[in-house]
Amino acid sequence: MYEWSEEHQAIADVVRRFVDEEIRPNLDDLEYGDLPPYGILRKMYETFGLKEMAKENFQRQLDRKKNDEAPAASRGNSNAGSTLIPTIELCKVSLGLVTSLGVSTGLAAGTIMKLGTPEQMERWGLDLMTLDKVGAWALTEPDSGSDALGGMRTTAKRDGDEYIINGNKTWITNGPYADTIVLYCKLDDGSGDDIRNRKVLTFILDKGMPGLEQSKPMRKMGQHGSPTGQVFMTDVRVGKDRLLGGSEEPRGGGRESAKDNFVAERAGVAAMSLGVIEECLRLSVDYAKSRMLWGKPIADYQLIQLKLANMEVARVNVQNLVFRHIERSAAGAIPTLAEASAMKLYSAQAACQVADEAIQLFGGNGYVSEYRVEQLLRDARVLRIYAGTDEMQVVAIAKDLVRR
Image (cartoon, rainbow, N blue to C red; front, side):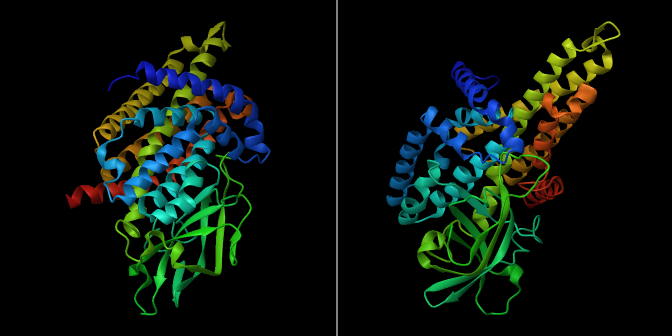
């Protein structure tokens, strides 16, 4: 694959119209008015028939689970391009929308649909896939960001046929508004073993459960369109019906589940980065052609041309990463941890560099919100932090290569 097909371009055109009509007019409220993104996202689902598609996809996955068939990922995903295009177009205007959507329908719903029992899929999965309910994926803790699994301190202690959960999660996307929370914690079996090595369990929690507290949205540098908060558990009592997969040792669960989600999340950052890069380049080219200095447009000056050329190089490189991911997905090839981490590391850095250069090109105008490039940099900056910091990507790439 070396360019978007006519079908892909048609999808992009339709999404752009929705962005222009429904999202851009609400940008100030998303950025500064504390407008939760879920109404806009649900309207998008209704407009493009995504809700009905989600229902159909849910039924296929449920039928496969009941028939104990192989998951869809192993068969190849020929729709990867069509799925990524809305991500790219939405990220041109608000990365926060994509973050909230991806966590709810991708991480939270995806984890339940992959590892849950048929009963759990029907009880929680469908409403998350259709966006009728909002989901959160709670892994990170205040003292265990990069050491998410080893440093985890949230515990679940057996109490007869139930568990009692205690702990604290932070930086949880959708945390303040989530109806359903997929929670990772360590088993406290009373053995006295080092907590770093204890079994990781996954539970499904519902908003309003006794002992469960969801904080107000945090104030952040960027991605204001994606509410982020903390989740506190104080003696939250759950039955085995909320233990994902119905077992303490489900196939693909626990630590393996979290690591699989890392791979998917990191590969997706490339598409998000491409949206930022394309929008910064478009805005910069338009501005360079219209901004006059010493009697001619600044686009005529070589230092400005160098900035634009570097932006285009970054765009081509990140687009090629996205195209490669689409082709491999269609062939049923799952990225290795090294490949996914390399995609994430390079594309996130490229997006931040391009956005920073866009601000420099705009000069003083780039520093004010009216020209939008400052928002794109604020939104993009967290791409180098969440789903694993740059430093942890380097570690993941090196370790994966050495193990081969």
